[in-house]
Length: 158
Length: 158
Length: 158
Image 1: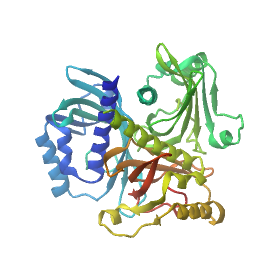
Image 2: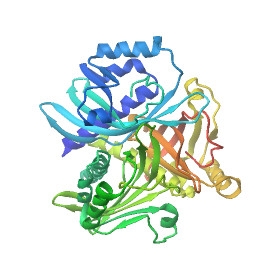
Image 3: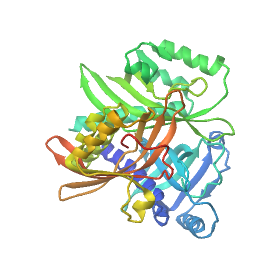
Image 4: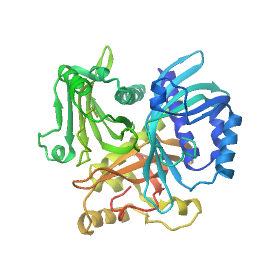
């Protein structure tokens, strides 16, 4: 029982820390939420539901994530915006062979300079999480988003 | 203390599982979140606050809920849309005579094909929850919504 | 471990109770979430990030909060609206010298009579929390909002 409580706490804290890093624009810290060979994918639910492979973004290592962060912060020209993640308590689905399966609904709000905040991307995190000496890490996070029309291009991680 | 922690965990997991079932369109599973004689009501906060009985939807058994699901999925003509529920941690108000009283704020986002996600319905779940051998079940859930102008008709459960 | 679990529970319940008091318009109860010399500030993230002092609202005692509530409910002329807070599980950052530091992402939705609900203000609570015989109280809450264009004037507490 104690283990179940602690696991829930740790998963929710992982999600809260992940959101805080992105919303506070500490993008350099983002890859460290994953294992070195961790996977990060952003996929429309239509494709996810049908088992289609097409994804908006698919990164397969911390190295690729670092590249992505570099691209986003240093090279891609885009209008600036803030993000704000509100993530519900995770649904912890089970633990097997050291992999914790969990999912959580999220809403990401976007605020552009001089503008009102707006709903940007809503969906579900589908996660595989692993215990490491440095705490819980994402072996994989798939962001399955409902939003069919992604407002402009999606620049920052979800 | 341990009991309080476990109760909070169980209520939040109930809410997360409920949201997941609806958002993943597993509507057939929805009535099973309630007791057989469970009540489900969707009511404008204006009416709720004044103690008026008028509700948008009021179902008084699992049987009525099954009917509703059948109607929604098989017979009602309506434009398709996805929902996404983001529910905050529940406020567990107490337990008396085996009834747990809890409430939680929710935001439901709607996404129509080819469109951006939008705020659909926001409000508060007011719940009476009962322990059963199959886990926590809703004796009653009242969805008290702020949204005065319900976007089109409200088709799927909140 | 047990302490960590209980602290998380208490902080999340504080946030949920705070949100419920505001959303249910029990404004008179709002100052009691703070210490007598508690601070409440609402600040744009641009100013917060740059360490600038400018804030939309800055109250430095329960007395000032009571004044504010009186002003909002009795004297300020404004169009009525409902609020709905959806707050994610808090990120508890640590406890030192009896001060608990925590933060949580929030989204506040607004509903005006006869209108659809809309995103009103999103941001982050940055809190210092103290244990008292009456439970956890806010020594200070800073609401750092992303929303650059605050929809009309911000009347009710965030």
